Figure 1 (tube, rainbow, N blue to C red):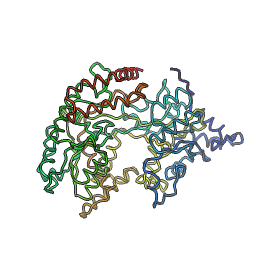
Figure 2: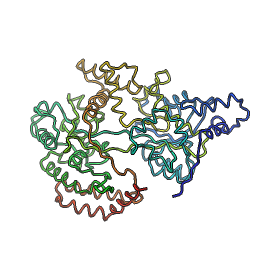
Figure 3: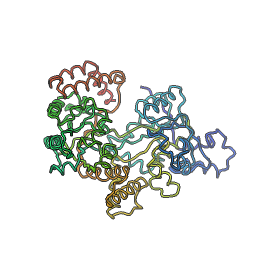
Figure 4: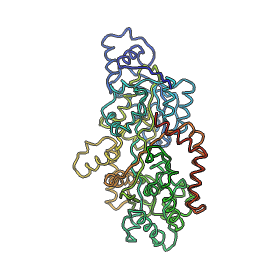
Length: 568
C-alpha cells in the first residue's frame, strides 16, 4: 500500500507562516521588519504563542446533541459556532479564528459532511474526523499534513503525559502513526471503567438484605424484590432486573444491558478477544456463552429478569424505574444522570447505590476496556499554519484547566450548558481522568487540599457537591444536576476506585471491508438467536446452530480479515 507524505519540520512551518501572511490571505511578508518576522516565528514555535495578527482557519464544527435551545435565557443565547465562549477564549489566547466550512450535529450528520468534503477534494484547513477508516483514506490520498515535528515540539506536557498514561500497547498515538509519522492528533477516549449493579438501597434496608456479590446472591436479591413488596404498596407489581432489548454491547455505554452477567461467567460477547493460541475470535460465538445463556434462561423463567424485556423501549425501562416498579439495573458509574434515578430521588425518596456485582471467580467484576482514541484532528495538506491544531488542543487540554483569569469564566459557565463544543472537538485526557478528578475534589472536601488546586472543571464538580450536601443537610431535595454530579463523581466513582475490575482489552476495534456489508445481518442473526434462547423459544443446544449460521453468513471470513488486519 503506497502512502505519500509531506515531511514537515518546524522550521519549514515557520517559513510557510511568513510566506502565507496573516489570516491566510496570502499577503507577502517581504515588507516586514526583522522584529515583525521574529514575532511571527516566536508565536508559531510556542505551544501557547499568540500571533501578532488574527489568523483565520477553515474548519468543520461538531455540535453537541443538546441543541441551541439550551442557551435560551442565558447570557449566551446569541452565541454561534463561530462566536461563542470557546472560540472567543481561543482567540484571546493565541489570536486565531475559525470560519466553518460546515456545521453539523455529532454523529452521522457530521460524518456525512466530512465524507462530502473529502469526496469533493476540498477539506477544511483543520477538522475533526470520527473514524479510523477516514483517517486511512486521507493518508493514502496524501490529503493531510505530517504532524510529527509539530507534535514533538509543540505538544504540551499534559497532552504527552495523557497519551503515555494508556500504556505503550494502547497509546492513542499508535493509531495515527503511519510509516513512523504522526498524521493526526488523536482525541482520547477515557477508560469508562466497569458497569455496576445499581440497586435501591432503601428497598434493601426495608427487606434487611445485604449487598450481593456473586451471581447467586444477585439472584436472591432479585427474588426478594419481586416477591416481598419492597415498595410497600401491598401489590404484586414490582419487576426483576430490567434488561435492554439488545441484551449486551457498546460496553459500558449501553445502560440497562447485562454484559456483566456474561463476563462473570467468562463470556465476552460483542467483542473480539484472543483465544488460547493468540488468534482473534468473536466472543459471541465462543463456548463460554452457553453457561451465561443457561443462567439467563433460568432467571427469565423465574421472573428475575423483566419478563417483557424483549418488547421494552429505553423509555419504557426508564418509566418502570421512575414509577418505582423496579429497583435494580446494570449501568456505568454515570448512571445517576439517567432520568430513571433523578426522578425517583425527587419523587420517591429513593436511595440508589452502585454495587460491584456480579463478580467472577476472581472475586471482581470482569470488565471490558474501551479503545483509547475517540476520533482525530487532521490538517489539510499545504495549510500555512498547521501548528494551530496542536495549539488549540493544548489550550483545551491543559491551559484552560489551569487558567483562573477573567477570560476563563465563560468557559466554566458554559460547561454546564455544553452546547458549543471546543473548536476541533478534541480533548486529550489521561485514561483515568475521571478517577483523578474525583480524588482531587475529595481532597478539598476533606480539607487535605485547597480549593485553589482544582482545575476549572473540578471546581464545577466541587461546587455541585457543596450544593448537594447543603440541600441534604437542610432536609431538602437537591437540584437534579447537583444530585447527578455528586452521586456519579463522588459516590459511584469512589467505589470504582476502591474496587477496581479486571479488564479484558479487545483484540480489535475497527471495521474490516466485509463488515461494511455483512455485519448488520450478522448482528441480526446473533441477537435473534440469543433472545430465542433466553426466553425459551429455542433449546440451549440451538446455540450451536447459531454459531454455524453466523460463520456461514460471513463470520468466518470476517474473522480471517480481523486477524489479517491485526498482523499488519
